[in-house]
Image (cartoon, rainbow, N blue to C red; front, side, top):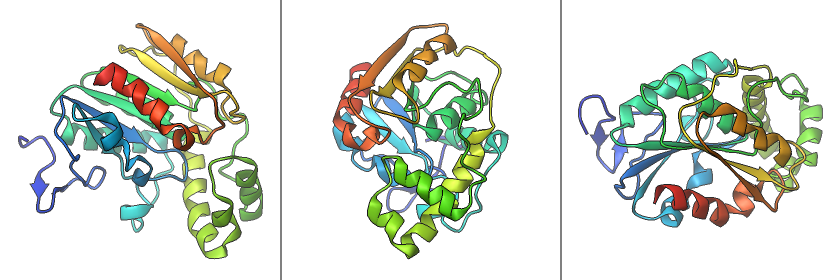
Length: 250
């Protein structure tokens, strides 16, 4: 790595808090992975093995969770996108792609505006394009209302919501992420890269038909991939998602 990239320190770590771990293998394409609201980098812990040696997996460590639990949340998309893009520029040394699920999809899209070159492919998942605010905002719900909303949405284990200590750790993260995504919209500017958009056929939060609208956001091709799952299909259909990514990048 040169001076513009994340410096390596002992134990395969970098000095970049957003991407503190070097990938398990050095591949020809980098894949930046952005988690959904309430999620963290650990969601992608098996992707390196599933994607194979040609793809480097770089899961983003967002503020306020996991290894960055003591860092303040970012609830402003302009700030989040600038800081994330700056961190990505420290790492980027070869062709790269971006995957983001739910909130992670629009965070990844927003970061592209601050990157000097477009990705080789963008993979939004479980999210509509950012041309309108959320039709059902979450960020200003109180704890009881937010907990009830999460109970109705697949993807959050019942044991977490039923355990007070675990629920108290989860709710601030979800609320901050919801505030980040609830009101953000962007002008309909098309990206200069192909898109593969994953949609859950039983996703009640982001129906597959809404996900298909990413075709309007690229000057290149858009491939819709429908998954037989609800909003948590990133966990239940990990192999299908990784196989599709591997087909494009591997």
